[in-house]
Image (cartoon, rainbow, N blue to C red):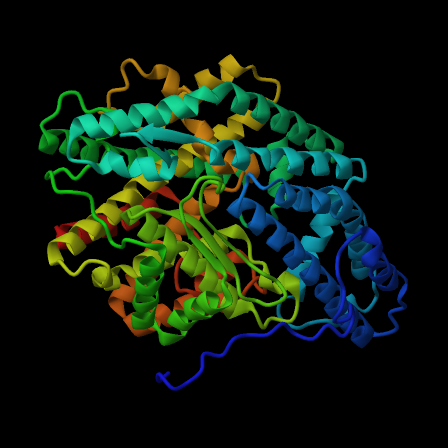
Length: 576
């Protein structure tokens, strides 16, 4: 695209079913549309096909309406009006929407013409519908509404956390940048203040989690499951693996990756010449160099990410340009923003929104290209005709994002003109993979324990958290004097509060991403083509087939993990 060409800005598709002027102010604004779908006679396969398109149009509109309410609230958690707008949807729209959704699923799967829809993807969609029908219980609708309202409180609690350092009030993400200071006293001071602030709310967060656990367990019992873990596997559509596969992943990581974690910690202790190695020593450069600063502002972060994506494929860079032109980004950290980062798909327009809390760190760069990978996924699936086709499972969604972290890495010289800084950035990121897999195993195993033991006490939760944490943590870092902080490390993990059991996907996808990167290393053109082919499938194929389209196995066995770790280790040696 030359400077004279205009960037094509996508427009929302026409709304032949719901109309162009619909505005959601109450359930009555959409109830007639649901009633139409429920009552409409389906006389042949074409009627059913059009019915599915109309249902998708309605649900895409509602999905995007909810998305904007959530996005705006997370951008300003202190704004009561924005919080109320989101809660209105959760309380007034979602309950009847859920009930009608079950009725519509029943209408679809009971249609005698369903078997005549043989296009790619319908079988996967119907499989999901049948599972949703199986676990639906009307008595769970008010519980799910209450649960969602409670879950959103976590972001407000954590988003309000600030610390004062050198007379400046700052968010925890901003304060965390000081953990990379070469002055040990500076980073210890920052670490203590961050954890003191987190600990200040540990009882509030414990009480919130107790309420969430109780609600989730009741929902599972109502649906006929022994526990919320088993319910979640059904609700998340985990057709391709079982809890036992997760346990195997935990053990494989403990055997194959944790020893590498210990090696890194031992090397860090030796190079820093500290004894003991303390928690505030984990992020500083071991050679005493100042923290990497790949950008100064959110605008610079975005501009450099666009250039980075351009080098892979101009189409990928244009995806970010379109988002910038449409105002679909909020990148910089500030007080009042919810924690974390996300890419939120917008089902009607097909152009997602990226939210994050950037300061100026390498971690922020990685978050940007990670969420950018999710965004690319949205663009590659935006023209699929049904909402169900555009919503892949998280094991696939995270393959998109985590692969982009690695695919983009060879082009990080955009952020680091100094070759030594580029080498440092690559090494830090590859070492973070060795850190990521044990942390994923920790959080996932903890969740299995939590919901297998739904009546546990706070003391039992602390005890078992430490037991699981110590299985996957390095044995070098010394926490003496801070055990009371260590007992609550889990509270910083947003997923435990807001999206339970959504975490093993990061581990599975990390393995897939290493495979995608290895393919790219061997043949950049074919590797990138396989990546885009897999993402373009959306959810029109089972997970294993989508991974196969990217030419990577859906495999988290010990042997496969060891093979991938050898590859990562070899790459670290080449860089180092």
